[in-house]
Image (cartoon, rainbow, N blue to C red):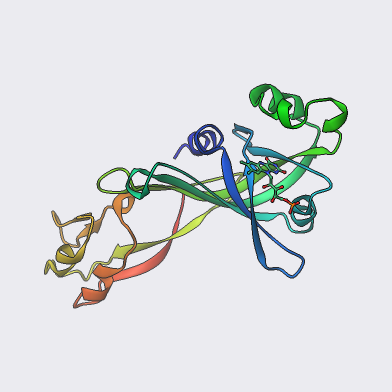
Length: 211
Ligand SMILES: Cc1cc2nc3c(=O)[nH]c(=O)nc-3n(C[C@H](O)[C@H](O)[C@H](O)COP(=O)(O)O)c2cc1C
């Protein structure tokens, strides 16, 4: 899949996202960070060198972020991503201010920008999740030469086509045209009902390579 489409969606549509990093004890800690640029090499944000956030991501470059938009649950979409950041300093700083002119109100002078440093999320994997479409839609992606893995439910060859799983699937996303039945992964909620009711244990949860 086209990961750049999702990186651009994070930058343009979600923009202010919640970023999780690790504190000095290895515990998770979150803050809101704006995603300022996106290209085929990743996502870019900036922070100031005096911030605890700066210290945290220098000590441990592994982060996770979630952005979402919508006025209520059933009109919302989210993207979650985990990846690694690297500091690129002043590179792209001018582009960031050009692309996000509101930043001039926060850091109005050249002098006031001196503490700012740009970071690139240069590799990662994530998932887009859309609760506003019926059935729900989800798609995973990865970038920066890494292979991302996500858990999926999968129906094995020993499916007997009994139909028990069809009755409990909240999204009607199991195709029974052929045996073994097939789960439409892009619409699956991962609730696990199908695995629970399968009389022959044909449904398994497996790690799947994301694109
Ligand atoms: C909407 C919004 C966007 C923000 N964007 C950024 C950002 O892009 N970079 C940044 O360093 N801080 C940003 N902040 C502020 C951080 O969330 C805040 O500094 C954070 O809690 C880290 O603070 P600390 O490192 O001093 O603990 C933003 C805050 C809000 C409310």
